[in-house]
Amino acid sequence: MRVIHLIFSLLFVGLVMAACEKDSVAVTEEPMMVEPLYTVPEIPAEIAELMAVEDRARFEAGPGEAYLARAEEKALQYRSGHRPRWRPVLLRLEYNLAFLPISVPEGGDCLNGDFVICIDPTTGMPVPENVPQCFPNGFPPDAIPNFSGSTGYTYAEGYWQGHQPLFAEYWNTFCAPDYAGSGYGNYQVNGPENRLNLTAITTPIVPTPVLGSCVDFYFYRLGEYTGGEGIFTGAFGWEITRIVTLAENDPNCNNGLGQSTAITFGWVRY
Image (cartoon, rainbow, N blue to C red; front, side):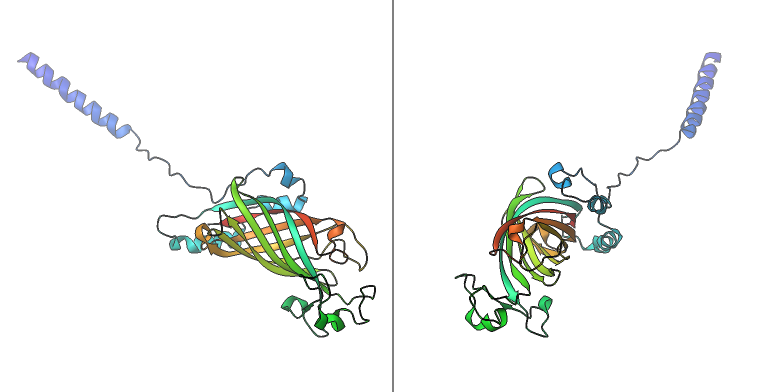
C-alpha cells in the first residue's frame, strides 16, 4: 500500500508543478504584419541626373497627406478581389513634338482656348482666314507675326514600371508672354485598354522666350491623375514632369517639329 500511496503522491505533485508551469508561461500573439503605405525606391541614375534637389525631396516625401487621406476615404470602395496600393512613377521619355503657332484676339483668353491657329498643319502655310490676326502687316512671313503662343501634340514610347510597354500622349497649349499653359493627356500600358488619364498645368518656360531668339530651355508640367480604364479604373495621384528642350524646339522660332527629353516622377494609386 505504501508503494501505491507513494505513486499517487508523486502523480499529485507532478500535476501541481505542471499547472504552475503552465500558468507561468506568458501568452504571446503573432505580430500583425502591417503593410507600409508606400515604399520609396531608388531613383535610376538616368532620371536622377535631370532632377533638381527639390525634385528629389518632393518625390521621396511620398504621395503627401492629402492623397493619403483620400486613399483612406476610398478604403471601403475597393473592387472585388482588388486592393489598390501606392506605386511610384519614375519615367524618362523622349517626346516627339508637333506644335503650331497661335494668335489670341484682343480680349481673348489663351488658356480658355480663345485663339486661332496661324499655320495649317497639312500645308505648312498660313491659314487664309487667320492671316489678318496672325500677320497684321500681311504675308510673306518676313513681316512681324502676331503670335501669342503655340498649341500641339506630343507623344513618346517607353516602359511603365521598367518593363511594361508604354505609350504616352499629351496635348498642350503654351501662352505668351512666359509660355505657361495647360493641357491633358494619358498613358497607355500594354495597349489602349489600360489608360491612365491626367490633366496638368505648365509652369513658365525658363529662360523666358524672346521673339526671334532660340535658346535651350526647360519647364515643369504639374499633373494630376484623373482615373482611367482597365487597371487604372479609379486611379488617382500626382506627377511632375521636367521637360528639357533644345533651342531648335523653342516655340518662338521652331518649325513645329522636334524632340524633348522629359523625366516624370510622382505617385499613383491603383
